[in-house]
Amino acid sequence: MEWQKRYGKQGLVIIALSQDPLQMQKKFKEGVGINYLLVQWQREKMPKPLSLVFSYPTNLLIDRQGRLREFVFGPNLQALEPSLKSALKEKPPAVKGKPSPKTPISKP
View (tube, rainbow, N blue to C red):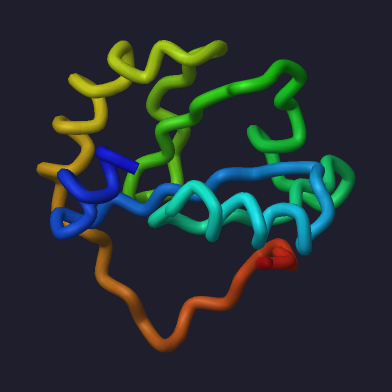
């Protein structure tokens, strides 16, 4: 939640994936005050590297071009912060037309 506040204006998008039912995610999000996107994780529908996640929490840093920059297993997000700061300095790619999602995602 802190990173979304700190880096959101620079382009950071946080997406938390959960196997929990959407209603449970919605209640949790409202109860805790989460300020980022929660989606239902369905391994068989996820592209790599998301389909390869096998432990929780797993933190993936995917840059503006969609490349996996770094990952950390466990709650040690501080290990990603230097790479995050570097990735946020990169110029966003030019977008032609409206991007279409590759994977259907259910949101609470």
